[in-house]
Length: 198
Image (cartoon, rainbow, N blue to C red; front, side, top):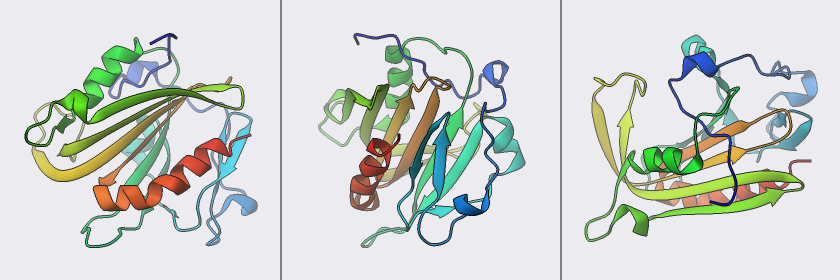
């Protein structure tokens, strides 16, 4: 990696502060079936119309989650994809350590190594540096991700995208995870949403 990135370490509650911008929904931000305006600092972009904004549980809000969406399942997939946006203050270490942690959330398909199914891209959205990490395989889902004793449910044929959005009043962190077919169908809209921030 050529740059030092702000990174997300879930569970590091000591780093958490309130978002520097209000996340209350003004009338023009409500889900009217045409998408929701998301703000990262002074940057904005409207989500695709089929993303459904969800109420954030109080506990999750206290752990840095500021937006939450379901993305409807596609094809024969049984589950919707989910998308979360987090805001934390401070650096949680270098990108490599966090990417290694994200890799640890998946088992690779049979016959492959985890590095065969993981990819990191550095890019910019306008002038904002962005780290874009993709991985696929069997997802080690935990309903209580911060509890080391929480039961792990293996979900085969899943994909996940993690994004570090290093805007001036950030950083902000995005995670989209779900069944492979559903993720593939929503990826174009997700990428377009990211690139539209201004």
